[in-house]
Amino acid sequence: MKLAFLALFAAGAVFAGDLSGIWVGQIPGRFDEVQDLAFRFAHNGSTLTGKMYGEIESLPVSEGKIEGDQITFIVGTEMNGGRNRFLYTGTVSNGELQLTRQRILPPDAIDSEENRKRRIPQKVTLKRLMGEPAR
Image 1 (cartoon, rainbow, N blue to C red):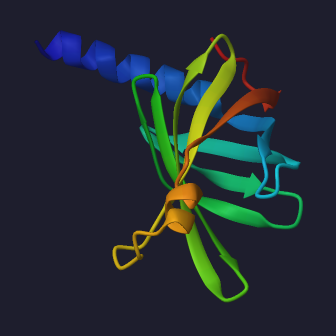
Image 2: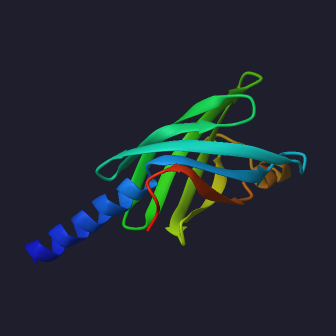
């Protein structure tokens, strides 16, 4: 039992090391334009840290976790006095990060059509620009 746990832990650690580096991609913008984005990831065990670089700002990655091939992290923004948080979830497959981004609405958010549109998940594929090669 202990050996199996250690093997799973080691596999997770090796996988996590594969994410270190710079990953780039494009995501649909608010007005159907395409936005470039990049992430610089680093890891420590099952913790994922880094920054997201957009066209106009860079933002820290928070609450990053790697469990097996599952990746989750949050990126928060402030714009025009409002705060937004986005949850990214996904996996690495064939050397690419396949992510889904979804806005996290505050608990007191009104259930409106506009807020439902804001929560529509967006898919993004990131490719490694620099760093260790993905396995």
